[in-house]
Length: 354
Image 1 (cartoon, rainbow, N blue to C red):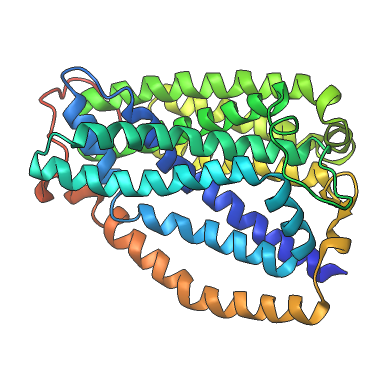
Image 2: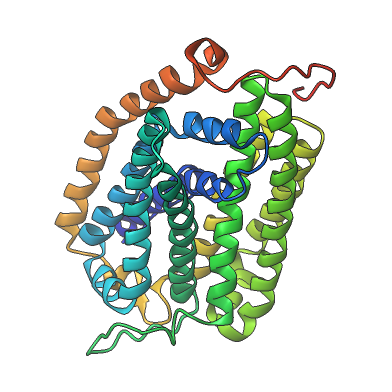
C-alpha cells in the first residue's frame, strides 16, 4: 500500500507549492488595501511587477492538486466537495474575481480609466476572502468532524464556521500577507526603492507576529476542537512543530536584520513545515476520523497510471516553469528599472540589503 502514500506525498507537495507561491500572490492583494499615501502608486507598481507575468502559473499547482485528488482518492474528493461545497465555492469565486480584476486593473492603470478604482477593491477583497475560506475548509477537515456516512450533505456553516476554523482561516490570510511582504521587500530591494523596502519590511514583521499569535491560538483550541489532530501532533509530529517555530523565529530575525533573500527562502520553508506538520499529524487519515489514505485510494492500476503520467508531465512542465521564472524573475531582477519598473528612491543613506 505504499503507492497511495507516494501519490499523497506528491499532492501534498503541490499543496505546499500553491500555499507558498500562490499565497504570496494573495498576500500581495491584501497589501493592496493598504496602498495609500504618497507611495501608493509605487506600491501598486511594485505589486504588479512582482505578480506579472508569472502569477498565473501558480494555479498550475491548484489544478494539479484538484485533478490528482479526484483521480487518486475519488472517495475523499467526493465527500469533501459536497460537505465543504459552500466555503470551496466562495474560495473559487474569490479566485476567479481576483484573476479577472488583476487583468482589468492592470490595463486600466495603463489607460488611466476611472473604473480601475473599482477593480482595485475587487482585487483586494477577493485576495482576502480566498485564503480565508480555503483555510477554514482545511481546518474543518483537520477538526475530524466531517460526517462521511450516507447521505453526505453540504454543511451550511456549523462545521466550517467555528472558533477553530475562523482562527486557522485568519492565520492563512496572515501567512499570505507575510509571504507577500517578504517577497515584496526583495522586489523593492532589487529596484533600489528604499522607502518601500522599509515599509514592507515593517509589514512583514507585523504580519509574521500576527501569524504566530493566531497559530498559538489555533494550538490552544486544537485539544477541544480537533482532538484527533492534537493527539497525532503529540505522538508523531511534535518535532516538526518545534522546527516550524524555530524557522519562524529565524525568518523574523533575518527580516529584522535585513537579510531579505534568506528570509524569502525561510518563509517558504516555514510554510512547507507548517503544512507538513498538519499532514503528519493526520496520518493515516485523509478525512479524520473514518476515511484513511488506503480506504480512499482508487484502484492500484489507476494509481500506477497516474504516477506514470505525473512523472511524464514533470519532465515537460518542470523545465518550462524553471525557464519562465529564470527569465522573468531571476535574470531580470537587476534590469527592473531599465524596463520601466518601480521608480528608484533617492535615498541611499541606509544599507538595507546584506
